[in-house]
Image (spheres, rainbow over the protein chains, first blue to last red):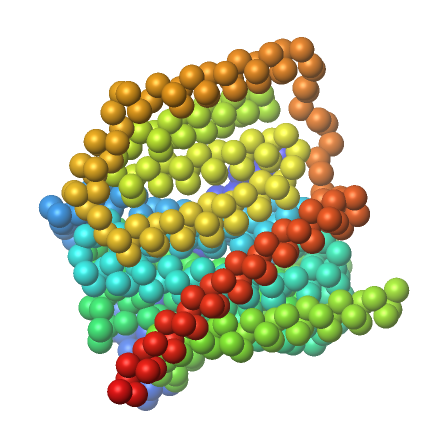
Length: 328
Length: 172
């Protein structure tokens, strides 16, 4: 029974993450349409959600062409590395009390490790394509992701200092009185911006800036291997939103509005409901950013990171440490 | 169960390290080396040091190796680099390192065979690591931070000189 339950959780998280990413491809286009005063895909099924199925069928039946000048084994492997490592990171997310694959006592660091593994998907894809656009896209993404990883990690350390643990379940439980977005506001801002850069979404999608680099690191990819990059990117958006929710917005915490029924398992449902609502809010925010923001220049992106974000995070760390020491 | 996983991870680690040394294509060698680092992270995890395991993934596999791949992309050596590597990997070049490594291996086997080293039952929490780092090993942390500061100052110096030169060029 326990094994079945564990397997159910594992596959539930795996499939749930892909489903969320698939629905997001439709949701994003509809929302972009709304905010940019046009329609977006609205033909297939209710509100056009059937476009996801149509897109998937198209992607599967497209010719998966490997360029003859590419480094074949790495070329094939690279999208799988990106998708796999982002998928792995979902393992430590607590969706509701007891609903998580594993509660590692280094959960937060596991997330950091997996997101730094995802860099290789982009990097090796760019390297193995053996074409100039892909190479430059890969180089840019390497520099961008490695530098933003630094602030991403440091911005979370304030939360870890207050909680006294890297475990995500403990981090959520520590927010019972007050969400960390209040006490760690600087950390939240930095993590948010670093998260956008880490999942290389617009406005920070310089690795794949169309005007200069065609499609950046995945210029040479087609068919399902391109599809894996695309699904990986959308899963990255879901992942960052889920982590913002867990770390700064109290995860599953929220009023238990079904308590009057007296059924025990319904409280888990409401917990998951609050988690999903908060995560959906941040996913929508990501889409809104894409609809509204222009793309910065590459050197602007790097200097924003090292000259503004890094001092801000260090300041946040020092102040948090000082306040914590004063309290004890 | 844990023993099987340990030997599996150890075998992968050894195999990939061997491949990393013998590959002539730099990118392939690096990928093998990354897998080797990940395998040693698994070993750390199995012997009850999850914190060290995750740091191995973040720092070694996730940051340092990315920089190596970065450099390879910048140089973009291609065929010429592969031929050069092939020339360097001649049989005669193997002799001295092989003898030295064999001596080390013999020493290690001797030490390990005389002592019992079971897998510890309890795992080391991040808190314990922090306490010992800033307790008995504080000197090592301080020295490491000074080394990092020296590296930072050096990098700044190199970048600064380059910037000033380009500015002068533009002014003329």
